[in-house]
Amino acid sequence: MARAQDRKGIRLVRLTLLLAAISMSGCYFPDQRALEYRVQSKVAVAMPVQDAMAQLSQMRFDCVRANPADCSRLRESLMPYSCVERVRVYWSEQTRLVAKIEIPKIACAGL
Image 1 (spheres, helix red, strand yellow):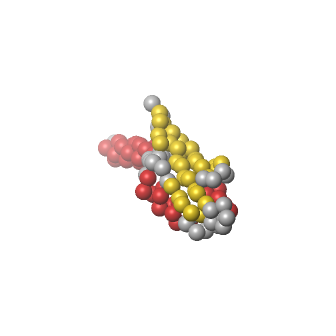
Image 2 (cartoon, one colour):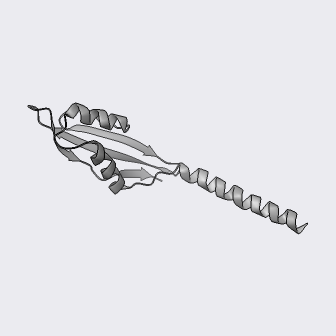
Image 3 (cartoon, one colour):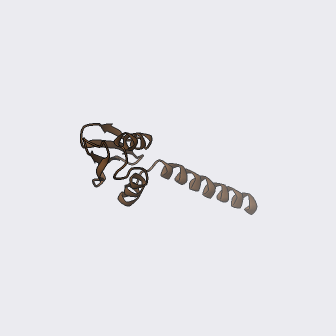
């Protein structure tokens, strides 16, 4: 009888851990440093602006292609908040090469 209760307890703990892992997998936690690293590993000063836009698009950023290009992506969470990650890409009109990259602070809002 004690063994049956132990097994039920172990199953309950495993189920609780599994549910916790599943619920946490849908959570987004803003990480400015990680965002900057990811963007800077794909987009660089002096690269063709078309290549920069393609890289940001692959990263699921939507861009308004004026100069500067204003790119953003919405990051949602199971928690009651959402965050917007943004990147601005400035380029030379003459050479069509990236001149400057800005990565503003991640903006979050929610309950």
